[in-house]
Image 1 (cartoon, rainbow, N blue to C red):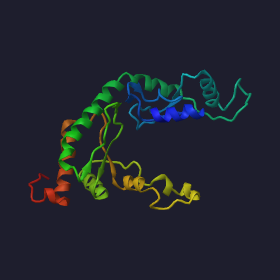
Image 2 (cartoon, helix red, strand yellow):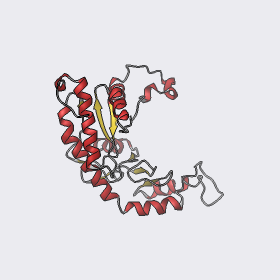
Image 3 (cartoon, one colour):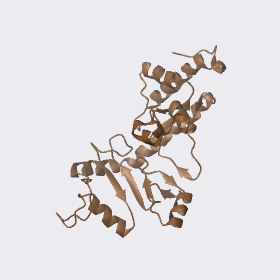
Image 4 (cartoon, helix red, strand yellow):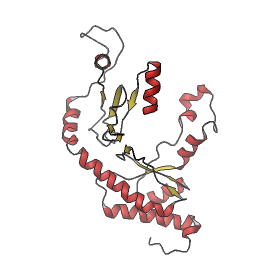
Length: 242
């Protein structure tokens, strides 16, 4: 973010910081969403601070941007029925706000539980280095682990094996942007962005929600160990409980 902000200041640009699922995360003692000119958060139910339906929040300390965002969220009208610009209906309804106010009190506790789950995974996944690569967090960053995403050999087979054993996982995201149909007009083809394509084929998000129990975490690690005992020569011949 330091380099991004430096470039923005050099060329007179505004930075819109996407902190959709990073509320509580930090970078060099600054909270996610507070570094750019605008910070955007999502309150979709699957986020680490989720409402009962769609919702979100934009924050800024720039008065002119604040006024513009406030107008855009009510169809671009100010005063009412007078429209100088085109906006939309982006207001957070009161029911969502009430739910979020209650849940916000628990966010710090939930975040710590996610970090504890991540620490457990990191400690146990180190046995599978070469077959599973865990996420990396730099010292200056404070991660809240809305997802715990690994990179795995035989990702699709591993995912099916875990599903067959009652463990839900998710892939964020299976198709890179440059291969999406909506961007076909840009003329990109497979191979143009090899790292994005490799990530799309290898990444897998493990359960990391706050209510996860120690027994569930041990079961997940056990099943990963079992899978790689069959697919990785380093583990062949070991007795692995099924």
